[in-house]
Amino acid sequence: MEPATHDDIWDNYLAYRPDLAKKVSELLNNDDKLQELKDNDLYACAMARVHYLRAPAGLPSEDDLHGQAAYWKSYYNTPLGKGTIQEYVHNWQTYGVK
Image (cartoon, rainbow, N blue to C red; front, side, top):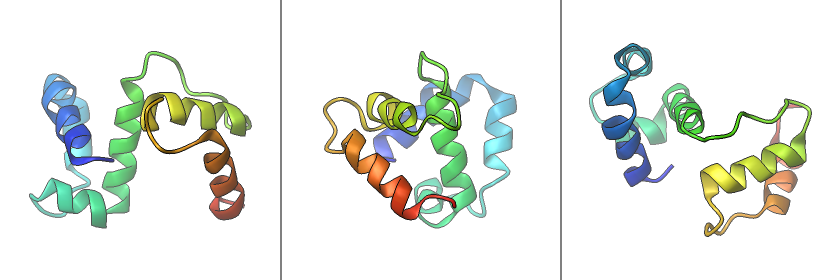
């Protein structure tokens, strides 16, 4: 997640959802949120999930790898991002949970 996206989530989404913001904040080990994004997997995962909460479409089913890849490309990497659906699928098949 890019720092601007991280900050936008806090400024324009979590700021208006105090219950969710509290839950995410409880995952922090210190006040440097951007450093936590790099070093704290629980916090990074939560921020990624919050990012997806802002997407207009629901998440694909857990057994739809290609649907997940397309969703990631549309809502996380964006159509202008360098990532590809094929790269996502390859990475999941190589590094994903087995």
